[in-house]
Length: 124
Image 1: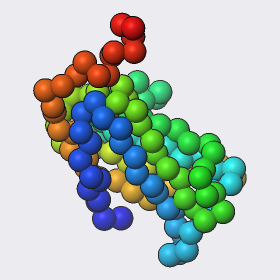
Image 2 (image 1 turned 120 degrees about the vertical axis):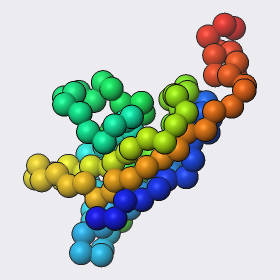
Image 3 (image 1 turned 135 degrees about the vertical axis):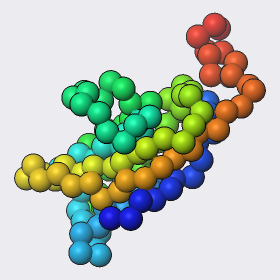
Image 4 (image 1 turned 90 degrees about the horizontal axis):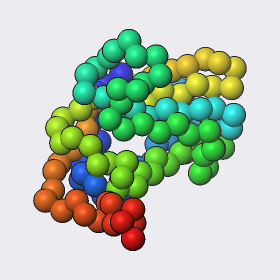
């Protein structure tokens, strides 16, 4: 597995990216599968619930499961995390319980001066 680099996350903005799960070069039906995306400061830790994750999402419903496609979709509050160059992975738990890590790599988070848009709804 070759490490990959995701597009930069601009802190405090919407961030979306799609993922196609393939086995033997062909899209694998994700129906009944759970797909996990996790970003952490370190490559690994022993925290069982991933509470140390900077950003995470668990997908059990997929935009096009039959063709192995799921979309990770984050709102500005989700991406309001410390800027830096962080480690991420995607793990897929298939319906039979088999779990695989088809993607691992780095993602950069860039900072920005504007923050108030993230919390405007809370103060209205």
